[in-house]
Length: 186
Image (cartoon, rainbow, N blue to C red; front, side, top):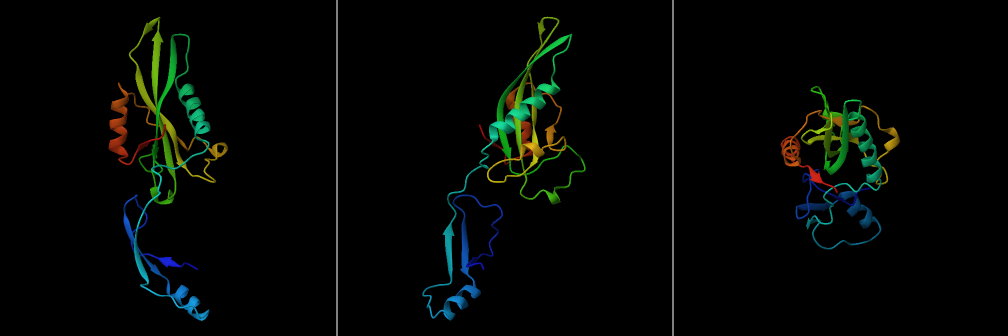
């Protein structure tokens, strides 16, 4: 049985927000049946505090290592070009994102995405090409006991927009346009 309830929208709370809690009638009746008297108002306004900015993923390094593998596989050296793939920054997106034009977000409640920017250096015929930046990551992630189940990740979870950028700032500007709530996690 819930002791408190609220009519406020509590789906997008931030530290400092205020919500009004109300003692449930069932709780008041239950306590009255035990001959307890509750004094004071049955509503109270409280300030939200203690919320973390991003999910705390205890196996984040394992997830990032998996993402590194995807980025390296996508930029494999061959007989005419040598690639060096270097992880830059990783970001949390508080929703599941999709590569599909037909993505359905109705079934993605509680899911999130982790995206990482990679610097791709290419040397072709012993000539260094200008560095490029790409985004790789995973979407449709959920936490269980502060961990992402990495063994259950599939190609459906992989994220890459296959677009190259000239700088980290250019990548970040593009991501912030698409996902305004994006936040750095490392």
